[in-house]
Image 1 (cartoon, helix red, strand yellow):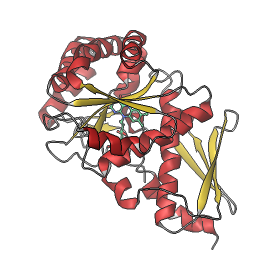
Image 2 (tube, rainbow, N blue to C red; image 1 turned 180 degrees about the horizontal axis):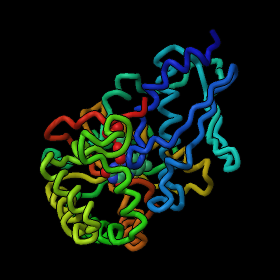
Image 3 (tube, rainbow, N blue to C red; image 1 turned 30 degrees about the horizontal axis):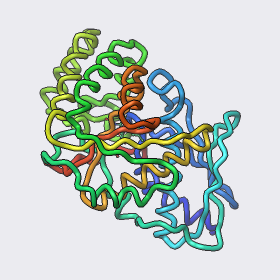
Image 4 (cartoon, rainbow, N blue to C red; image 1 turned 90 degrees about the vertical axis):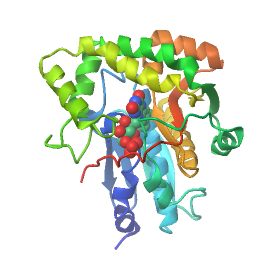
Length: 311
Ligand SMILES: Cc1cc2nc3c(=O)[nH]c(=O)nc-3n(C[C@H](O)[C@H](O)[C@H](O)COP(=O)(O)O)c2cc1C
């Protein structure tokens, strides 16, 4: 048995890392002396994420999750980050002399989840945000009252749903019935999207009739309704200039999500606010920095469902 065999046993836990549309784009290549983390282009989102911002953030989150899982299992490793487009790799995990220093453990990885339904109607208190900020090394974290972003979210959602490529890509990751062949493996289940069975079947029928566009105002309004309640939106910001720096920002992003999860706080990402150029500019103006990730954060009214993962 080599140390990478021990590491391999942690793959199901590391794969609990979050990913856009739950596409799980990471690949894990184990050899005797390293675990190489890369990505599968078939699981990237070229229409919705043309700059690969979210791909690199998510792969960074995956690297961080591996480091936490290994530290908790007593395996001393470190990450060497190098984004290579030709081999589609982002990092190598190598043996280290000391354990990876982290505030988190496997239980935090397992506890984290996105909660897209209602959160308790309250803003986060400064102490809760301060605990999350402790996890940052270069990125910033700004809190905004969620109400202030409701109209912006409507604009962003309408823009994105009327971009045929983005809507088609999202559709391919929707799992609107448990009978979907990949329901238990990947994508966004109707339960994860906080939809009832009836709402999901309704959406499925409309999508089958190729009528996604008229739905845009409805979907945008549902999201905006949640934002109009009392609550907090957090914006991670930074100045990454290279793919490696974006991967590093992804590590900070999941550390913030784990720090929130450790306090019972769930997140609901709202990447559309950054994906839409017009709302991104507005957000950038408001926080005075480049937004990298935006998410509603609060105590979920009901426990979010556990998202699917590839076997
Ligand atoms: C970089 C990044 C961007 C994301 N953007 C969105 C988003 O815009 N809207 C959303 O509902 N979820 C978004 N998510 C959350 C994923 O959909 C979620 O992680 C995935 O479905 C797995 O679910 P889980 O996080 O509950 O395990 C994003 C996740 C990551 C890592």
